Image 1 (tube, rainbow, N blue to C red):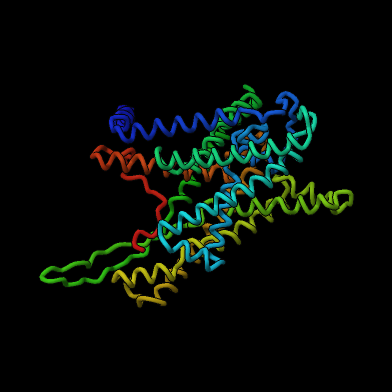
Image 2 (cartoon, rainbow, N blue to C red):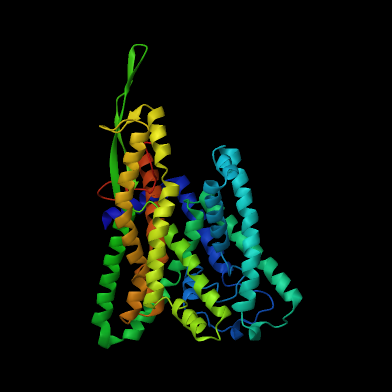
Length: 436
């Protein structure tokens, strides 16, 4: 315990780190306050909580602002959608791939396009949100003026959230966008655990303790999945420059068991809305009603089976995009590096690709299991709000952001020659391809 307080003292003794932490806290407070400001023209007391199913998961990401019809009702989800689209375009469209390789100027143009696309997506989602989620009884003066003004406010709220995320990245600890999602998820945890605890009562106190122990082991498993890496040894050739000998060092390429991170779950979850939407067109028929009821509820086995299959597919797809084995092999060759026993160039790319395929398969299965764990938690009697912390996107984001934040703080401490936060050594970050 003494070591913990010493570490906290060391953290706040570094002026730059102290300012960044306080800035981060300030920006997060602004974000949370904004989530409680209701749209003008909406009577908060008349809002009905008729979401259920998948929309409850969206509401969990946004810290409840979605159900409150706040000015941050859509949060930064449209920006994330736009970022995913742009990232896919950099792979499929040569023009965007060229911009990505142009350095800082290319990144600025891609960021501008992402912001424009965010506004377009937010406008479309705002209209759908006002029509389908905000009940008519809560709107004081429905009409064209209310719709247009609310769409403008929701767009402004989303762009303000994006600005807050960028400020946290620049002036705070970092990972601003992820930090906003994390604080929205964490804000619901006290209420969820209190609801679960009071619902069990004293007669089932042992069962609640068992649930907490199970949650602990699930979190440990997610941390192991996030941190697990396969290291490929790399040897750099020695070079003689003048009278001095350079190079000859040994390094490694860390290939993560889950290189795709949380993106496969986000992609799969986005597509899981489609069956319900299609079924809604024929909701008056038996087939349409079956599709809506089955794929609108994340607890059904059909929903979870399709969800798991989509995660497996997207894990391989996204890993192939984010881990270009050909580029890694080419960079090694240019820098005079090689994998011992493997020829540089094409043979190295095939070797890396083979290892990546073998470790991605178990990683994809583990990711799919984690994604559907909340459904199993509900089946065992755990409340729906508390079950969201047993897996899925919520838990993966929480673990990823916390590990990255610890790594940022750790680097500041080690730079100033303070003892690190972890007794066993440095916190491993999520950076990729140190050798590339």
